[in-house]
Length: 333
Image (cartoon, rainbow, N blue to C red; front, side, top):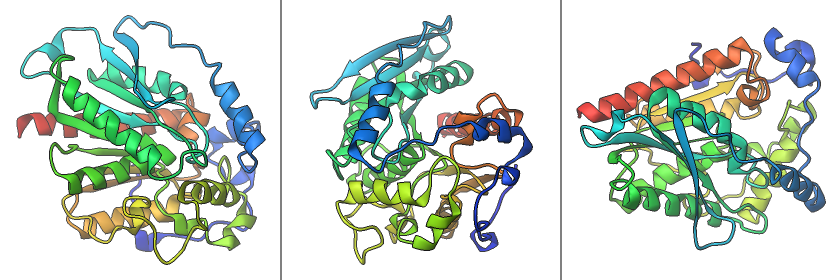
C-alpha cells in the first residue's frame, strides 16, 4: 500500500500518455472507449447500453434479488450469502453501495460482479442502490435515493439477517462522493450511523471542475470537461461557486468530526487524486480514522477498466481487508 498526505500532492503531467500508466494497465486503457457525456443524446446511448446488462448469473454462494422503490427508476439490488454463518450472533454485516458514472450516467447493474464477489468473500450482505441521475434529477434526488435505501435496509435488517449496527456505506467515483455525502447527512440526521466508508476514487469536490487548466491534461476515463458536465448537471449551477447546498459537495463541509472511519483509494494520475487526498487530510484533522491507498500510474476507475490486472486485484484485496477489519471491529464494540 502506498499512503500519501495531501501536502505530497504533485501536479499532473501536461497531457496524459499511455507511458504514464502502470505497465499492467496500458493495454486496457489503450483500447478503453471513454464515456461521452457532454450531450444528452450521448448520455442516453450510454444508458441504453447499460440497460442491456443481463441479471447476474446465480452464484453458488450468493442469492440475488431486486427491490423496486416507489420513485420510478429507484430501488436496490441485494446480494446475500447463502451460507448460515451470518444467522448467529445478531446477523451479518452489510454494505450499502452506490455506483459511479459522474452523476449523469451509470447503473447499479454495472457493479453486479463486484457486489456478488464482495458479498461472497466477506460473507456480508451488499445492497446496491439504483438512484436517479442528473440533469433530469439534480441534487438532492440522487442523495435522497441513497437515504431511502439506507432507511429500507435499516427497516429490513432483522428480516434479512442483517445486524443494523454493522452497516457500512461505499461507492465508486460519483457513487463514492454520494456515499460520503450520505455519511454526512446521516450524521446530522441522527439515528443509526454507518460504521465505515469505503470510497473508491470518490468524486468529492466541484471546485476541481472549475479549474479550467486541467482540461488540457485529458485524463484517462474521466476528464475535467466531463467533470464539468457532471457537477453542472447535479448542482444546476456552475461548479466552484461561493456556496453550494448543504450535503451537495462532501469536500465543502467544514466540520467532519464524528464521521465514520474511511478508506479512500485512488490512482496518482486520476483527476480526483488531489481532491481525494485533501479530503482524507481533512478527515484526519477532524479526528476521523482515514486510510489512504494511492496506486502509482493508475488512472480513474482502473480497478474496473483493468479488473484482471494484478495491480487491480491487489487493490481490491486491500479494500476488502480494510472493510472486513472494520466490520469485525464493530461487532466487538
